[in-house]
Length: 629
Ligand code: MSP
Image (tube, rainbow, N blue to C red; front, side):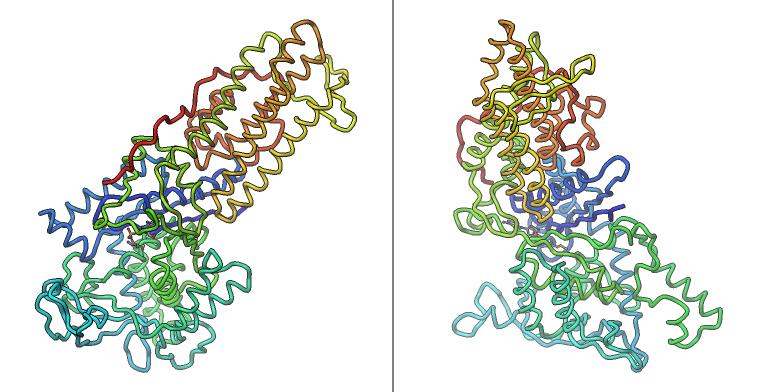
C-alpha cells in the first residue's frame, strides 16, 4: 500500500482580504492533493490529507483591527470568513482548517514551548533550546517596534515616520539556531540536542540532495537556502512582552509572566496541531507518563531517558495515523523560504525530536506580479480572485492559475490572457470537441454506435467480433487507420507524460498534455470526416458503418480519459464531461468517480449510448478591464 499523502500550505495572514497570490497557492495545493486522490483506487485508497488555514495573530492584525475599530478576534473572524468563502467558491477542498486563535492550536503551541523548556542541560539545569536575554536597542513608540540600522536614513538618523525613538532594554526568549550547549555524554553525531542546529541543517540539505530527495524544490532554491544557512548568525527571538503585543499566545506559566509568542513559534506549529492523527493532549500524557516512570524508580536523567522516550519525541505520544502521514509536502511562496520555512521550521522540528527522514519537502512557488511589479495596496494593483471567479467562473480562474505559470517561477497576471487561454484551450478546443462528438453520436445513432474495434494499421484492416462471437475482418482505409491509431497512441503517451509532470508538480505542462489529446481528437474529426462516412453508410456500405463507429468510439473514449486527467484542475467540468458521456452516472458528483488507473483505453463498452450535448465552456466574448480592488 502506498504511503498516504500529506500536503500543507502557508497559512495566510488575516490582515486583509485574499488576493490572487493566496488563491494560486491554495489551488496549486488542491490540484496536487486531487492528483494524489486520482492516483488511488477503490481497493487501495491513497489517503490524502490537505491542510491549509489562516495566521491570525500578530502586530499587523492588531493594528488593522484597531483601524477598523474592532476587537482583534472579531476582525480576524470577519477576514477568515472571506478566505473560507473563497475556497468554497474555488472548490479548494481541504481536509483540515488551521486557525491560529483556536484553543486547540494555542494549547499545542504552549505544549511545544513547554517541551523545549523542559529539555534541560544537566550541567546547567537550563533549557537546551530556549533562553532569556536582555537586549538594548532603539524603540519607536509610534510604530511599537525595535529599529535596526536598516531603518536609519542617509543622515544616520531615524526619520520622522518613527516618531519618538528611545533607547530601551527588553527581555525576551530566544530559540537556539546556532550552537546549542552540548549535553555531557552525548555524541553530537546522534543529532540529539547538544548538536549545532546550523551544521545539522547544512548536512540535512546535502544529504537530501545526495539521496535524490531534495529538501527544497525547485533545485535552484537548494543553493539559495544553503547559502543563507551558511551565513546564519545568532538565534531567533520568539517572544514579545505582552505589554507591547497583546494579540499573541501567552507563554506557559513556567516561563514567567508577561510574554506572548512571536510569529513563527505560533504559525509554524499549526502543521503539528492540525496534522492527521495529532493528539493535542500529548504533553499532559507525557507529564503523566513521566511521573508514572518516576514512581517506578527511574530517578537519574540517564535512567529517565532509558525508561521513557526523550521529552522531545513528539511522535511517540501521537497515534500512529500521525506517523503514517507525516512528513508533508509543504507548498509555500518564495518570500517565506528564507529564513522562516527553510531554516526556523526544520530546526524547530529537529528540536522537537523529529528524525531527519521526517523533515518535510518544501515546494517553493514563484509570485504573480502585475506588469512586472509586485502587487501592493499602495500601488492599488491587488487582483481580487473573488471578483474574477464571479466574472468568469471559478473553473476559468483555476485553469488560468494552473496554466499560465511554471511552478517555481514568477509570472505576470493578465486578465486578458485568462480570457484568451480559456477561449482557446477550453471553449474552442475541449468544449468544441465534446460538443461535436456528442452531436455526431446523437445524429448518427440510427446508423451506428461507438464501437471499440481492433484496428491494425500495418495490414490496414479492421478486426472485430460479430454479435455471434465470430471474428470479422474489415478493410479500413489507410487514412482512417492511421489517424485512429495515432490518436490512441497520443492518448497513451500524453497520459503518461501528464502523470510524470504532475509527479514533478508541473501543472502547466500536464495541462498541455491534455490539450494535445483534445487537439488530436479535433484533427481526427477533420481528417476522417465522420459525416461523409455516415452518408456512405446510409447508402448501405457496411465498411463505412464500421469505420464511423470506430471513429466515434475513439473520440468518446478520448473524452472519457481527458475528463479523468482534467479532474484535478477542473473538477466540475470533469463531472460535466462524464455526465454528457453518460458514464459512471451512479457516482455523479463524487470524487471517487475519477481514477487514474481507469485512464486506459477500452473503458467504454461497445455500443455505449452517449448522453445529450450541453455546451460546457461557453466562449467569453469581451475581455473587460482589469479586476482590481
Ligand atoms: N502568514 C505567513 C505564512 C505563515 S505559514 C506558517 C504569510 N502569510 S501571507 O498571507 O503573507 O502569504 C501567504 C502565502 O501567499 C505565502 O506562501 C506567500 O508566498 C504567498 N503569496 C503572497 N503573495 C503572492 C503573490 N503575489 N504570488 C504568489 N504567491 C504569493 O506569509
